[in-house]
Amino acid sequence: MTSLVTGATGFVGYHTAALLVERGEKVRLLVRSSSRRSNVNELDPALVEIVVGDLADVETLTRAAAGCEMVYHVAADYRLWAANPQELYQSNVVGSLNVLDAARLAGARRVVYTSTVGALGHLAEGGAANEDTPVSDTDMVGHYKHSKFRAEQEVLKRAADGQDVVIVNPSTPVGDHDIKPTPTGQIIVDFLNGKMPAYMDTGLNLVDVRDVAAGIVLAGEKGVCGRKYILGCENLTLKQILDTLANISGSPAPRVRIPYAVAFAAVGLENVAARVSGRAPAHPLDGVRMARHPMFFDASRAVQELGMPQTPVVCALERAVNWFCSNGYIRNR
Image (cartoon, rainbow, N blue to C red; front, side):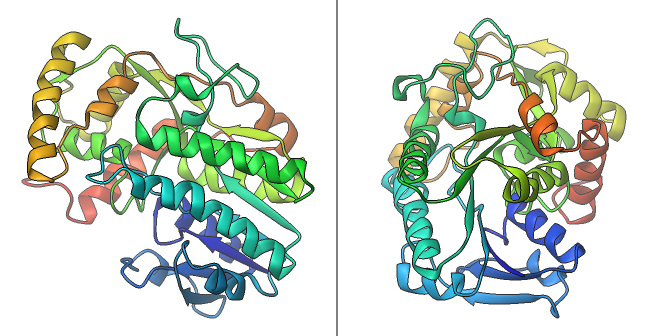
């Protein structure tokens, strides 16, 4: 069986493709002409076929999906700041609908759509939300979350209309091969480079990126059409995450907790300057807004219904630290 994977040059997409290849399956990868290919170059070329294309091109997408029983749509524009926010909607909403159209035209049996927990509801008091926690568009903070929420709603409509689509909502993946890196990977890089003198009182659900890849593949095998599955693991405060990184790396953890209002004001000035210059700020304001409440989630459904593994997050953080250090992201170490 051949499967199509979008986004394989990135973080989660690479691990999804790598898992399929590890199982001996053939994979076809949709890759943009401008994408850095160092991740996919590590995959077995005997099992990998690369198709150069873009989420905006339905014709190319249809050719890429031809003969594929499964389509794993992992690609997304994951930025918390963009000079032109419409780019996020074009990729995350229109691009996802194009993938669904191509999968249908090519006769693919099923599509696994990779959303995010950012498109789900959350509990402001710090409890663990699940797939059924109430949510609306007004709960979304920033264009990234708005675009993913809208895309997820469109995907649900397609499922209701009869297309076989399963939705997975990864929480905050960490691990090796975070090439760009993701905003969470950037936190690790900044910590290791001594650029985190303080922390905010917030929290995240962290998960090993390899477990996310396993959850995506398991959703293709066992998931129910139109059903959502949170792919997460451990709910940790940011302080706990930084302390764990300190234990792994030997670098000191920050001891100063910065109030939300102070962080908002400081980062707000930086983002005003970014709008003028057109250059991405080091600390996007949407990231501070998101940090106002802990983003804790319950992954029980994916564990019980799909059999998603739950690797201790410390193992993934260790791999992330080693990979960033070995690949030139950390200075003076």
